[in-house]
Length: 455
Image (cartoon, rainbow, N blue to C red; front, side, top):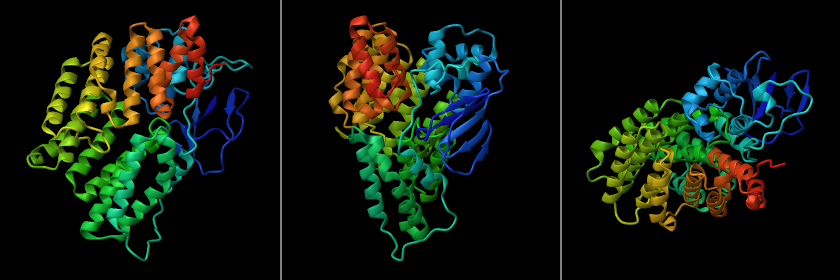
């Protein structure tokens, strides 16, 4: 079977099934080979041999998504060892509910793609694919970078370019529709920043490289979960390369923070932790008397490490890294917030809840949530994700009534933060399927608002 996965945009036409092959109409684009089949703009064609077991299919599809075992297992409410046994065939997967969760987390529309069942009628999956209309233009700007550029007659002002990037970051944190609005700006911003580093020289060029790095970092944020895995790696790598060309330690550390997000999702916890701690070591000798933003990104790296350790189940390391971040926040001026990572006292408090939730300490997470002032966080996107974490904690405790109420708050704060985050979508889908009968109409409305298939 050949599976066409539209990872960046809705299919331009209906999918049809012929003789065991799922055929998805594609835009006219040149194909690129990659390890699991063929990639064409916005679509991945994965060859799925008909003789594969369900576990082998899960592994192939997981790897084609660039997902690590801990990430996929976490989206299903299970541990990586459970998923490893499923993929290796040591354990059978007979639960229809878990199959549906896996299919939803892998963004499949048809359960038969996991089970290999040969039937004329498809078995729809409620989770659906995560797509966004901004992705084709962003893909074009990132992946079709020319070797020769038409440079402007008048060299651009790097300060103006940086102001545009900073404004786009503010929009990302303040808008309810941040992916849509920032996504519309990114193609032009990427091309203008690429031109600037080619048109300028000396210190002005280094300043333009910082702006280019920040542009790619923002691109990574805005396309998280909707971009193909290979584009996510390209964006993160270009952000780091531009930062290194700028010779700015804080820019390098910020780019490492972004690349660490990719490593946390696709590699081992040890690799992700080692990478962000190397970046922290780069900054540490320069922190005395350094600008506040240097300490801000250093603190953000500590919180990044805390979440990575928590997701790996390493409680001691997680709280040690969190405490290091907390100490950095206390050393900064009251009310300080790092412009892109949102590091500050409120973000430290939010991460304390995230660490507790990822460690499955739901009772502790709820005690901490009761003490947090969400309005102290200026980022709508981050406030929304806080409530998603609280909702996940309620689900862990079996309180779906409270979880539904809290998830509705998260969606009201930032609809796109919920609609384009797999963990939030999985929680919403769980609530729709398992909500108390009296609340199912509300759960259904929330699922439909998020873009999940509830029929």
